[in-house]
Length: 384
Image 1 (spheres, helix red, strand yellow):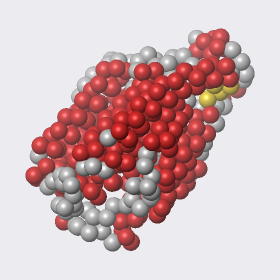
Image 2 (image 1 turned 60 degrees about the vertical axis):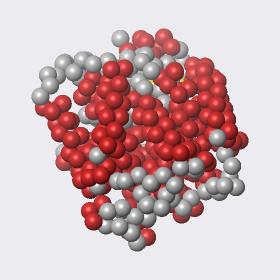
Image 3 (image 1 turned 90 degrees about the vertical axis):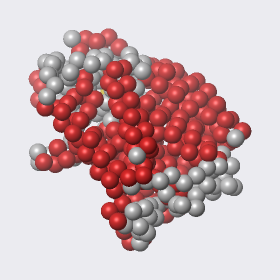
C-alpha cells in the first residue's frame, strides 16, 4: 500500500512541477501547435504536455515500484520510453504514419515477448476459450496497436484523452489493488497521478496540449493494463474474479475504441488511408452541435462510465452478448448523433506556414505539426 501511495504522490508532484517548465521551454524556443483547418484551437499552444506526464510517470515508477515482485515492469517502462520518444518526435517534426506504426510494433513486441503479456484465452467470446499462441500473439499485437491509436486519435479537444486515460487507469489500478497485485496497482496509479497533474493545465481553455508523446503513452499503458486485467480477472481461481471480464475490460475503453473503428472504417470506405486526418471524430460531431470543450469531455466520459456500470451490472449475460450490445448501442448512438441532430456552420481556419509567401502558403501547406516561430506576434498575425 505504501508503495502505491508514494508512487502516486511522487508522479503527481514531478509532473505538476515539470509541466510549467515544459511550457516555459516551449515559449522560449517558440515551439507551438499552429491552428489549421482541422484543429479546434485558435491560437498557438505548446503540444508537449506528454513530456511532463512521462517524466512524472517514469521517475515515480523507477523509484518506487518493487521490480523484484514484478520483473516484467522494466520491460513495460522500456516500451513506454520508446513510445514516448516516437510521439515526441512526431510532436516536434511530423513523423510518417509508417514510422509510427513500426515503432508501435516494436513496443508491442517488448510487451508481448519480454513482458510476457498476451491474450491467453477468449473466455467464451464467440464460444472460444484457450488461445493457441499462433493466434493469441497476432491478436495481442492487433489489440495493443489498436488501443494505442485509439487514445491518440481521441486526443482532439481539451481534457478528453487525458480524462479517458485517467478514468481507465483509476479503474484498473483499483482492481489490481483489491486483487493484491501491488506493482500493477502502482503502475496504474502512477500514470493516473501524472495525468491528474497534466489535466490541471489542459482543461479548457488549455494552456498546453498532451501531444502524441502523451496520448501514445497513455494508450500503450492502458493496453497493458486491460490485457493483464482480462487474463487475471477472467480466471475463476483469481483472487478477485469478475464474470465477463473481457466485456468489462472492453467497456472501459469503449469510447476511444468505437470512435477509432468508426473513423478508420469511414476513411477506408471512402478510399482514403485510415491514418489520413479529418474532422469526423465523435468530439467533432458534438462540437459541431454547438457544445463547448468541457461539455463534450463531460459527455464522453459520462457515457463511458455509464456503459461500464451497465456492463458490470449485466455481466451475467456473458462476454459475447455484452460486447455485441456495447458496440451496437455505441454505433447506434453515433448514427443518431450524425444523422438527426442539426449541425451548425463551421468557420474553417486556413493552414499557414510561417516565412512563406502568400502564394506558397496557398499551394504548399506545411507538413510539420510544430513550427519554430520567431515571435508570438507572428502567430497572432497569421491567424487573422
